Length: 308
Image (cartoon, rainbow, N blue to C red; front, side):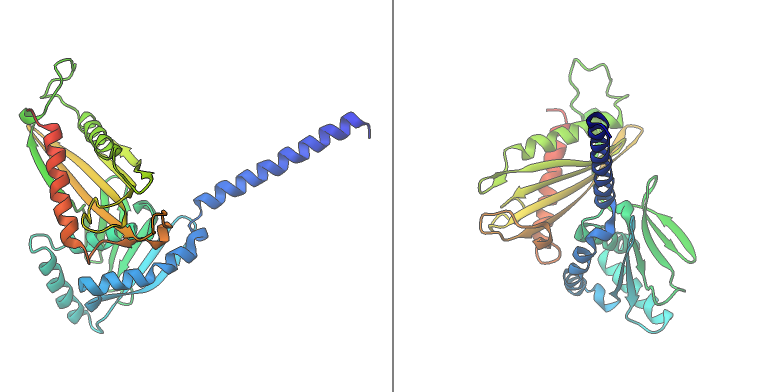
């Protein structure tokens, strides 16, 4: 073999090796099984949350199943009979939200996605997995959002706080080519994203600047995350914080509903940013802080949109 052919074959082998490594790296980044140890490490925090919220009186986390593209959490019933389970579940649902008997199920799903650090389309939650006749499955539907299925019914819904505005209240630049009546949902979403980016731009903690990221932005939905914060939600405590904000915009005739959900986590760190696995959900220990912050941010979002 001459030197020219040897050099060509050597380069070809190197390219093949690097291509294989790249494929393995891409595969590993998208494979939830690589995070199995992290998922199991959150079981203690989940049980703590269930206990503090009182949900453990009805369900307990029984099984964590990790597949390549799906994380499934099975919650078993604490009751032996279906009648007892239904009574306890109905009481818990009513105490959480007397106007919406599915709000608690959606809250469980949102909290598990937040706790496990996974996209909602990668999560499935089964309630009363040891009692098939109860048949409650919660998952994410790309068209309808969070979906809740029972053996005897199917319901598709989301849980959010709501800011309602009439179209006449919106602040529209004089140079815009779009009238208020024809204002698109996309333009409202863009304005909210710009407000959030501006609002958090000057924030941070210790020697870190706040880090902002848009996780999802499609038509009427926006998922916005910001970390490297402190004293933002827990304003009298010096923790690292990160916040996840979900927004959904619904326009009907002359009215716009801006639905939002805010979740937060916190951790110590002694000035150095902790690992994500060291953060704890602010619910339920700091629920009052979180609710005040939700009210504060919704007011600021509203003020950023309305005419002055």
